[in-house]
Amino acid sequence: MNGAESLVRTLIAGGVDTCFANPGTSEMHFVAALDRVAGMRCVLGLFEGVVSGAADGYGRMADKPAATLLHLGPGLGNALANLHNACKAATPIINIVGDHATRHRQYDAPLTSDVEGVARPMSAWVKTSDDARSVARDGAEAVTVSLTGAGQVATLILPADTAWGESDGPAAVQSPPSKRRVSEEMVAEARAALLSDEPTLLLIGGRALRSAPLEMASRIAQATGAKLLAPTSNARIERGAGRVALDRIFYPVQQALDQLSGFRRVVLIGARNPVAFFAYPGKPSLVLPPGCTVHVLAEPEDDIAEALERLADAVGAGDRKPVLQPLSRPELPRGAISLETIGALIGALLPENAIVVDESINSGGFIYPSTAGAPAHDWLQLTGGSIGIGLPLATGAAVACPDRRVVALQADGSGMYTLQALWTHARENLNITTVIFSNRAYASLETELKNVGAMNPGQIALDMLDLSRPDLNWVKLAEGMGVEAARAESLESLSCLFSESLKRPGPFLIEVPC
Image 1 (cartoon, rainbow, N blue to C red):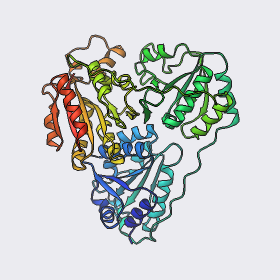
Image 2: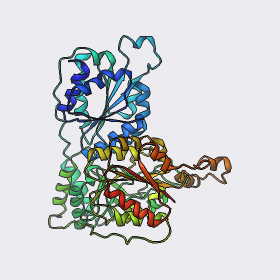
Image 3: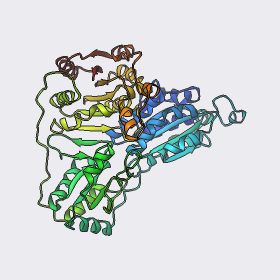
Image 4: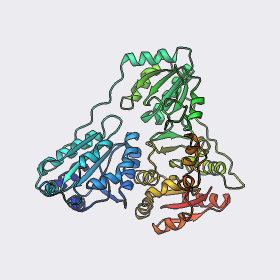
């Protein structure tokens, strides 16, 4: 057995059964091993940013890592933007990155690079296997590391000769360390804040945004009068009818400042001290009001569920009921297409148990509130601010949950970053309805141009934010990738196209002018 096969067998035995791949020459022995060893689903992406984004979507929904297969430093470099988003989402991912054979690296061949240096900024753990007999042990360690804490990115680099050399066989994967139990002092401090009679915010993120912890947090809020909010950007929220209703901190900095201005204390549970996305002239970076005291109950990597249970007991929330969202859909809208009517339409038609992947950027502001009372669903977001995650994230979510409909809300500008994901949607026949908000502009940047104080922009500046001349044709782009598509020219046609897409297997794309 060679090193590559020992690694594949180790991954499968450790529960890693999906590999998103864009391989090259240095990875051919790993590719051959995938063919010899049963049990690993292999999904090809035509660009490494699709591969890493799909692994992110898979990990968010499966709660376990997928592997990626990437080609040397440049291939890993192409994947980094969506690995950045995965880091911010605390998604478990195992990158397998090929490298030149150890004897070849000294000659500085065209693809020679510092692969470890490329990997480190977006990886919690980086290791280069020394020889074929080390590969399986290193792979087992990568699995354990990826599952440690809230979830991490682990990158294993395989020089080609470690993949083709003789190995000792697969290695056993060790269980990750238990999550840290928060101290009694932290629980006592959070209790005192909540019972202080000062306006207090419970800011919850990470794994606390799943149904059971959310219900516990809602009970605590009911017992103490605290306000419950989520951060602006979140890896996954379980929401909709029968689940806890939850608003988020606003993205626009002034709205966030106004929203939080009345709080004097905040208890963080799996969330960080909220910060504005960017610095703006005359605006603070931290959006909590001056003098607001921050109390940390649990970090994202801690045992959040157990901490919430202890806090609920401490504040006497045992007999309280969580406030759950009733089923309450908007009426199916009529009239002209607008961002507001699109939001109402999706809220009216969203199927039960859907997975919503939101990279709508400016265009989707009405959809989150319009879907609050839709049937229970999961909501996945852009977490790290690096656009181009939506179509790949939908790919991975659909692979992880093949029995669920994925609804991808996609801005046209960011969709172009990873357009190749549509080809994977078609090849794998994934159940994804993609709604493209076609405003033919980087609309968010038009807003930011004003926010940062850039005065009186001229035509050169405005051209940098414009996606016309020529206009993007998403129907033709999708069809060129093998995905059936149509353009909704009216609200009625959008309703028909969206409804029909939910009834049929496989992918469908709807371009909506807005």
